[in-house]
Image (cartoon, rainbow, N blue to C red; front, side, top):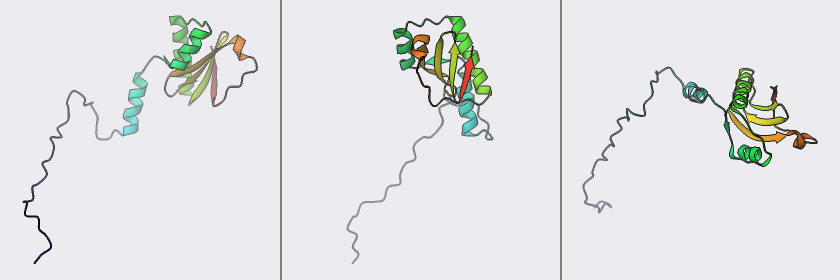
Length: 129
């Protein structure tokens, strides 16, 4: 006599419908790697964005940025990216912006009054505009 007492039939597992959603598919060739697709998505973001911390610092320190200023910051980020910089200190007039070049994000902002006796760390490049 065998030790198996379960008389229920074996039911095969039904495979879920794995058809891709055509709305979310991108035109990807088989030779493209994940890294190249990710880089394309990152590069599509054309304008620099500001972290919540940076927005708080801009407001608290009374820093007003015009569209022209943001355009200059975008140019500085692009120049730093071309040189392979990952984190940059962008100096614009009397304002310094610590910026993640890879993410195109301003991390924090400092005015001339707060620059004295200040040390910036984890910066591998600087752009003066």
